[in-house]
Image (cartoon, rainbow, N blue to C red; front, side, top):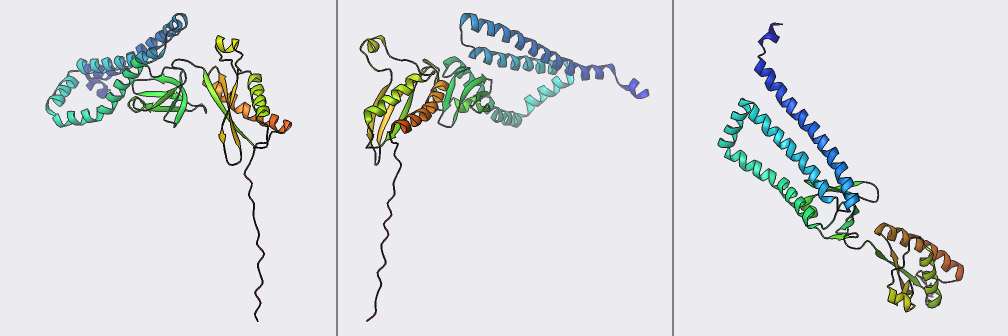
Length: 290
């Protein structure tokens, strides 16, 4: 009991005040994020605006709220305020260390701002980064860009890193994708027959779209163009241009077509060549001694 009486009311205030401020910051952040999420979702759906900057703004608001909370804590407790002023006034080396340590964090924040303003990609876009990562942009935070790949895994890349990469964006202007179907046939096979089979299989697929202009349709241009691309050692290379509405549909279209075209080729006698190897066995001569 004596120990409890020895604790001063000021000490209790200093212990409870930071806890109360941080708790209030957490609640405020949660409320703001929920309200902004509902408002931005409704606005994006009604006004058809890009939600990317809204995601970034939500993360920025959370950072600002917690920054204000810590500033209030330091200014509300005299001891912390005095210690903080003395520390920043007299510890030049510490300030330099903190400055170097925070360079990466500030670089990521600035890069995030550039991404949101210049829009090389947006939330929901399907991108490929330097032939290494592929997926859908799920979120853009103050420091990182989150990508969901085809395996439903999240790839988290610092904004300063992704801002310096070569990005292939499948959605930035036109989502339609031309999928190249390349198949080799033997020299003994009929090129016209193989081309007709490829065209029929592409047009039968539910994900294939007709990308012809009105002039091309009126001029009886084929929906699927098949061209001879060259002559290999054992095959004639054919390339079909199949269009799909999205990058994912183009991937499904291409993989399905390789299967269905192979089945049609087998059925109608169009050969897909494979390398032959001829082995010559020489008979060993017997050496006779005279």
